[in-house]
Image (cartoon, rainbow, N blue to C red):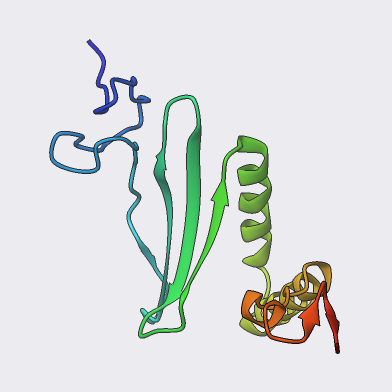
Length: 134
């Protein structure tokens, strides 16, 4: 008999979750943390959730002592493979080059998806349908 979650759905072969004593529905598989030389950063790849029919794969990276955690989340193999190749190719670059590509990515993301005006700003008196005045 195969392992199932609390909803009765069959777990994928990679599931390590104890559905009786842990999260009852999603499956996961953990990887060991990879600590950088000098011990100032870590990365990890993970199967944090999903089901046999819809698995999710994530990769995380962070600096120890703060700075936030960056993550990449995937729901298909092709996109995960592209990201793995991207990360492999970064190995030949300097930390300064990593910083440059991160800055470019942030710049282009801001241009492609500008922040929307805050909802509270849209509701302030005298503002109708995005126009000021009245």
